[in-house]
Length: 68
Image 1 (cartoon, rainbow, N blue to C red):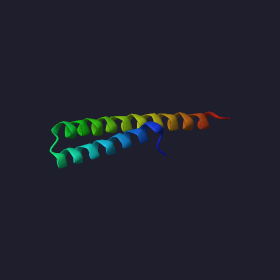
Image 2 (tube, rainbow, N blue to C red; image 1 turned 135 degrees about the vertical axis):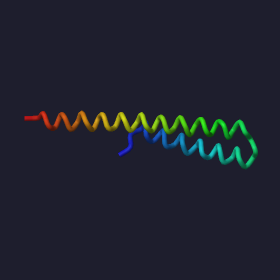
Image 3 (cartoon, one colour; image 1 turned 45 degrees about the vertical axis):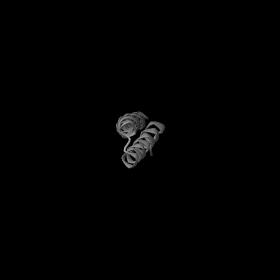
Image 4 (cartoon, rainbow, N blue to C red; image 1 turned 180 degrees about the horizontal axis):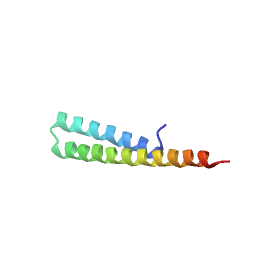
């Protein structure tokens, strides 16, 4: 299940793709570039969220294994 950071990253990626499409349609290079930045930032944010989720899952598994 996704955490908040992963969801936010996915949302930012989608926003970036929309901005790029609108930039293409309107021939607005600045908006297209802003969309690329948003999409790239969203990918990074999603990756950070995945790392955080996996770390929590690992800690939980270790905790379960250590229980008497």
